[in-house]
Length: 167
Image (tube, rainbow, N blue to C red):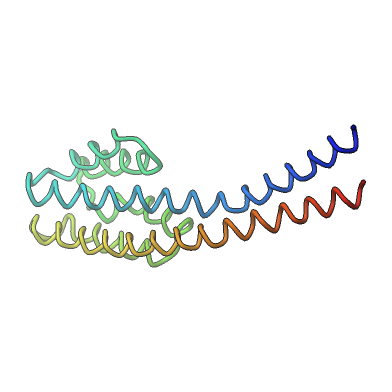
């Protein structure tokens, strides 16, 4: 009885390890989804309402999520007179470290356009960046489906082998 319980715990622990390995990709997908939502929201606000950048960033920060602290910082900095590109630099660093350079580059293109050009041009840049981030999100979701199954199956098999070896 105790051996069976021990074997069950070993298999469960191995399954948990497989789940933990895929957690990084899950977090990346969630961050990309949130970034895509922010860019889409920003494009709409810039195009339809011509919202000032501090108010735009503050409204997005109040929605919560992984970007909220960076957007709150950007709202304060743009209210003080910094450019959107400078104010969003910490967020670009976070995106670069977690999601890769392509995502950070797409985000930086939108940030660069936000303060320099008219609202329509900035909204178009946000939509182009939103498309690029959406493509990256789809790639990461595919990777999550493929690798998640693989890591889960391998970790459960290794756990079963370890449980049999201990038995």
